[in-house]
Length: 232
Ligand SMILES: C[S@@+](CC[C@H](N)C(=O)[O-])C[C@H]1O[C@@H](n2cnc3c(N)ncnc32)[C@H](O)[C@@H]1O
Image (cartoon, rainbow, N blue to C red):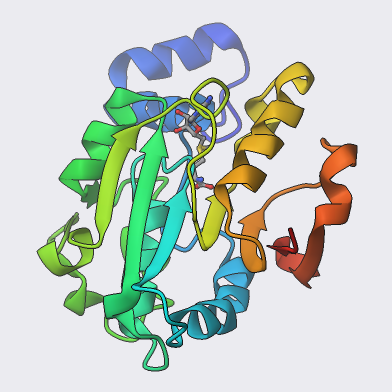
């Protein structure tokens, strides 16, 4: 209502009835699938040294990253673009598994097509990259993620509450999910994330308050961005 400068619900309803863009903006504002390329730029800045460290040869055959949950794919695509964009990161070593509970979100993620709208400026979102055109094809307001960026990522449906842990992940992104999860399930979710990690590697997560029993297992790598290393 503020955005349209309407005084009451009836007036806002009339705006919605005639304005497609406002209907889309309202849906964007209400959905829990809100995401973005390079969402929270500080996190991505703090991740660069972590990615550089992980990409060093360590006797293993690669670096496994879990984007959990990935929503419409912009989080794992950001990572895939960043490892290619940073000259000190060996992009060939990275494999990304991106999961979400929502098939609809995963369909959008697999398609990898994003549009600039009144509430989303894709060009602006991609601005941390040195050369965004290397990673997306742009046609007016539409941006298609290039095959080279997609090739590092597997998308899968997965329920982080009931499907249990994965194994041997070197880095786990779990961002902007806990706010939607009932307290009763938080501890199980933390255990799933912890048990998916190879000990001694950093992870990005949003909050440690929900799982007091697990706190001692983690050391901060970058406190402002809530990146932690699982000590095991
Ligand atoms: C706000 S988005 C976060 C996306 C991304 N991590 C980010 O920070 O931009 C939250 C996503 O969590 C997914 N989700 C909710 N419950 C889930 C669960 N139990 N397991 C896996 N994904 C879940 C939703 O479908 C939604 O796409």
